[in-house]
Length: 193
Image 1 (tube, rainbow, N blue to C red):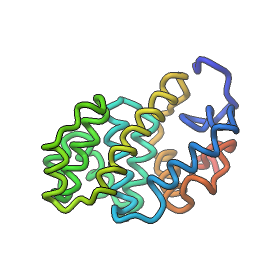
Image 2 (cartoon, one colour):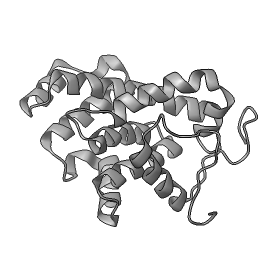
Image 3 (cartoon, rainbow, N blue to C red):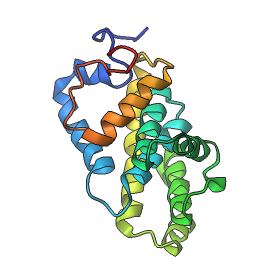
Image 4 (cartoon, rainbow, N blue to C red):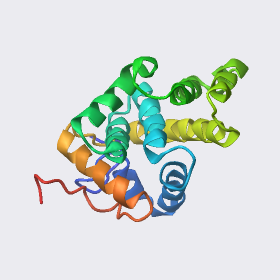
């Protein structure tokens, strides 16, 4: 049960966003820019960073939503879902680019604390052609998802274990992004349509 009362049927961050409309707009705009807007990193890669950080923070809702969104950006197949699981478990062994592995290493260091990122971490990313903007945005995505994960978990939001719901959220997010959604509506799945 959540620590404060949220509208019924709104899992994860949806409950707090509906509860506090004044903070919803800037938070949604930030995540839209970071994960869905134009960038040299693909939307799938940026969602993978959010997923990895959320998994390290043990935020079930966020790692499931963003993992599903990353998989949808990759094509939405079972193999794409498996890749996201590999990234969460051991990105160094996952079949992603060396640049992505270096950026995930930076994101993992940020998740532990910003001062854990070293010059060697940044140089590794640069050796694999990461730009300064990509490094900057990796750090910002990781830091932002520490905030989002703590927002969701700190209020003890409802986080159902329904793979179909997360699959549908991933489809909606990959299609609509973060600012063109009604956060006050429960996610619609094929089960409850």
